[in-house]
Length: 257
Image (cartoon, rainbow, N blue to C red):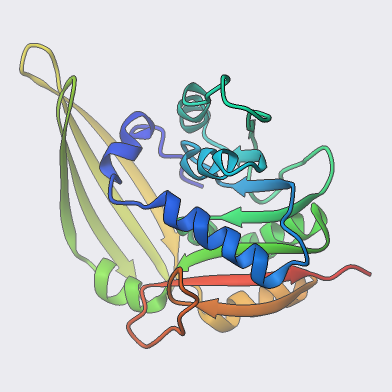
């Protein structure tokens, strides 16, 4: 699985439009809708630089962040506010398909299409089964995925340029997609240019890969792993998805016994 090693230190700059506060508010609304009480301990699976982990911690939740990239977790740890009241997030460097916790949690969140990075046969079942294993009875699993529409229209074989300015200079990221509808695999080829003090640029390359999952495949994997499906939504207001929806938000409850 990809780790975003080359761009971990500027990941948030390149994704400045992401609204983690809105995602956190949506998660709380899902807690209120699907759980008898808000959970105390929450896992942020594939937490990356910890933006969602910290957003939830600021709302009073005891948070665990799991990611397999040491570079991303280093950024997450550096942003921890140890002066804030309440427990600081615990960050663990582990694979989302086979992580281990010290006990169960009341809810598991998995944001920003991290599920799509499960590209090999059996990955989805392994991940969902592990999530189920560490959820409290009737605990909530809330995640989002990129839809088939997004893979075939927004990703496809398109190319994008991301650019931003930092205190240390300009940053440019070239993003080339290559989507194979037969396999459902989309390869992302990233070329990163960072400005140095002398005006020259350093170059880094990174290859990412996502897999397109049908709605049926996701629900089948949830069912096989012991989850009860609760719903699929198109936005943070629990809207119904349509043909051109680019992201599904899916909620499921862990059934025990």
